[in-house]
Image (cartoon, rainbow, N blue to C red; front, side, top):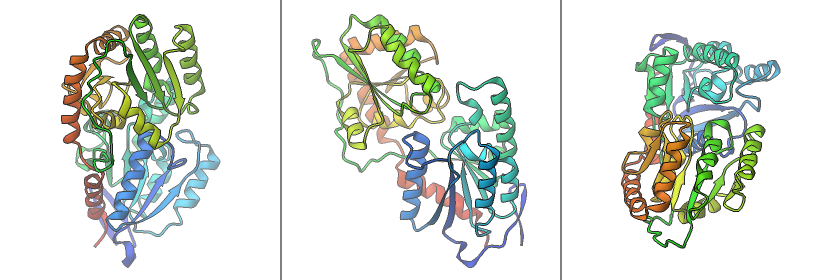
Length: 375
């Protein structure tokens, strides 16, 4: 039968068992320790708790710049799946597959899951930005719905990619409110004890580690340490730049690059830190900021992308992306002023108490999916 979904006619032959079934498509490895993959994992886990039967499909590595062979593998894999079942495709893959998206839209209610636009990644050439803008715009024109993780990303898709706001659903990431945490208002007032700074994020240009290290360099006379937890393998140049900067500013005794850590180790890092700092140039949401606030950590961040929507003014200090001078000032202020840290810590806990749960996020996701299942 032909059914109108939004402005796009779709030919769908739904099986009786389509109800509560979902195909979830993503590139690479679902266990990859990034915020985007964590959102995918948590959503899948909670949808399954709600009774959804989910078929997981990995398209392999190479995205967002797949080879012709990888694109053909995606096509041969996805075009043979049962028609009529809603298909969610993570934007990291969808944005590079506009022609395949057009074919799939004739067989499935197609939902794009966009964490942030591909063309907004840092470190791209002008030609890569142009190519990704074009392909992602074309791919998004094929879908029935778009799910984004922040109001800022919804605005970006509408303003820069021409996506009708009426087909966009904002589903904020949740937090593990029920998981045991060492939550406390930060109260380190010992002037002889170094202030423990924590940064969590993959070592890639967009996370702004080069600016963070340069901003810390003038503060060598203050008592602080910095731990950086995150994947060091995603961008060799960014990792080499980080290590070079640490050596250049003689901060090797102060800054520890830990790489990927276990969940238990990460919990301990959050619980024992005094301040969370991440100088990202852009975030589609910024799950690590929300996670840090749930531990009662005062935040130092930037105004890039959706961060101001995530971190309220009474929970942290935000500076312009790449503003090293004001980043240094923010760091100096929180390193020296324990009472200000305590006030921001209380604000962080207040903000965290208002955050959505993953269960609620999955319920919203399920509502979107249910509207797309043919009767």
